[in-house]
Image (cartoon, rainbow, N blue to C red; front, side, top):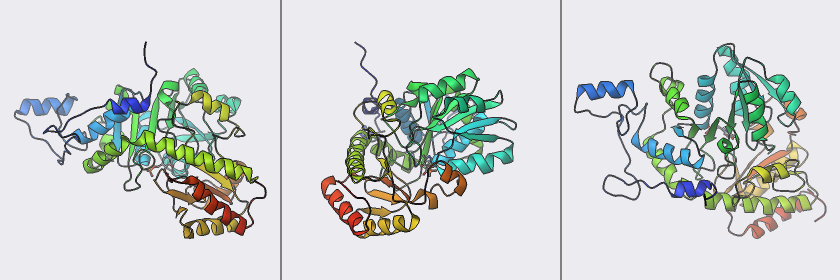
Length: 404
Ligand code: PLP
């Protein structure tokens, strides 16, 4: 019987040996590579040749190991690693779109991605319509014959709306467009390529690496797409050059092997806190709660065993209260007042004034991202019950929440 797809097993089965049989593959610390014949060098310059490397902006063996593991994890044919999540997103979109083309994007996305689509890409003649992805009629109406890309986040940042990837893929394909999914919030738990997406991007800065010690990104797609990104004459990755350093690629690959344990724990801890915050009558966004509008959808789409993700958002009503709460939580060592996510400790910030501040205030208000909204990336706390008691005490002190 064919075993069901499990992304963590795919990573686990990815075994490579170093030069000396090292269990961690040797790090290739070179920008350039030597050849024993000029003819071979010319051949490699023109085509990709298995096992041959020319120059590290093109490919590096250590980056290749990480890319191969990520392709397996996402059930894609090929992958490319890059120096940041934004590099992965921007090169992907520039590969797919030319001047005059259009993108349709979800309206609740990471602020940097929003700014790229709303402000920078129009300078290159590429325009974006932002829509509510939960409204299929609105998505269909926004897609035109000029649309090349339908863009979404699997779990949106910071409101945690769940993208109906199979339905969005069908809508995009109907119009001849392709679906690009940013899967940063849900590695392992969602496999967008298996659900119909054409390209997956990640900020590996977050859960995939998990130690908040570097910035990195990746793209997973068909072979042709990854080869085109690297084309020496036209490829945005080759020509903009956002190369990941090989020493970082090696450390991310090591961390990738514990991702399944971390995701399960992040999710269990986030669910624990979300249930208790909801129990106090607080407006909490977490797709693992049955009250979340896309709870059933997520259950239908997700791979079992990794929970519903490590991010939750809590609306305390005002910026003033959000600021006081975050400072008190940091003083009490619940976590850090910091942007980013996927770290082993809890991180919290108010998206309206940080990671989503690029989205205009009126738009933030329209999509329900109030000034009192705090995004929590819940850590790997060993005793989440104790963490909750600390949080509950601080909420009571600040008069936030009523019943339990
Ligand atoms: N995508 C999402 C969902 C993010 O949250 C972020 C960063 O916060 C990015 C992409 C950008 O990634 P990076 O900071 O690695 O460039």
